[in-house]
Length: 412
Image 1 (cartoon, rainbow, N blue to C red):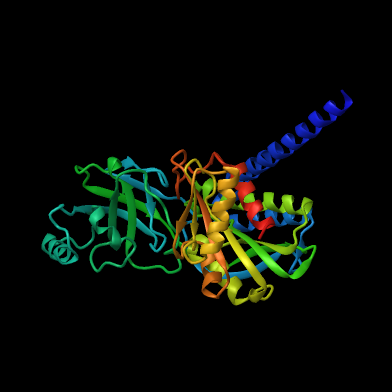
Image 2 (cartoon, rainbow, N blue to C red):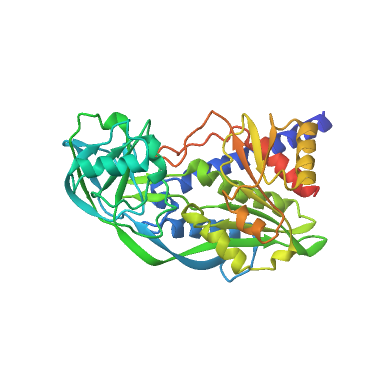
């Protein structure tokens, strides 16, 4: 009976331990996505507040640091909309972040402007130029369908700007915010802008920061057998931040999910010392254009040639349909090892291969010759992306994905 009780106790403790890890992950995700962190962007220094919290978690876990405080400071130029944003369509109020978004390359603007509805029969840039010139309108906003989506954010030679109609709540991006142009661009949910609308009222200011101070966060655990060679686990902790003084983009899946998994992996490896040294790096500036990871590879905190493998985690909060591995077609043996582990343990529905893609922070390392892969989960259970409603990622297959990653790293 005593032996049976001991076995039950061990199983119970193990189960609680894993559950507590998932509870920790969800708790941290909720915290990072709260209003207090302002979307982890560059209005109200949301990135700095998140970095302070993450660095404290590094210290609490006992990570060694490459710098005095786990920070790698750097800077970049960024445009922002820090104040109140008002938009009205024929006096009907539009909600920032929900009904519309503003291209981050836009300057500030104030006034009521006529709308120039471009007919669907106009389908080429040449036809668009001809139509605008014939309209005679010099101070209005073009209203464009999705066939002109490639023009979004560009500088146009007529009017005050343009509106791109979206079929649903529009996504926001900040990758074009490193400069300010003359044209104001908006994406608006077409259901909020019926074709009977004649004018739009806009009132907002921009603030361009030429040298925004931000930081990567890095720490490591020393290997038990090989101390001068690193396995590297990375994610970006930044998100889009705030568009105005009220709309904030939480970024639960993109990428508080990857950030929280890195923190969970730190806890795992403090209890299961690795053979190789493991570095944990969390980047800022990813949404602006891989700024943090590009800076790191140009100013590495340890020699890049010491990296045996880098695994980047970005948007890992689902998983019902499995995972996709970027650079799998480049590192075929590594990919097959991952597939074999998954097949043996039946962790996930599919481990899918994808080729090269410079779509996350693995890319600057890969370009420098570092063996690097990027993994994201797939699943229709949660499709929020770059929206004000990305605030409650389900972590559908989190524990199985966690086991797959640790199994690969432990046996690499």
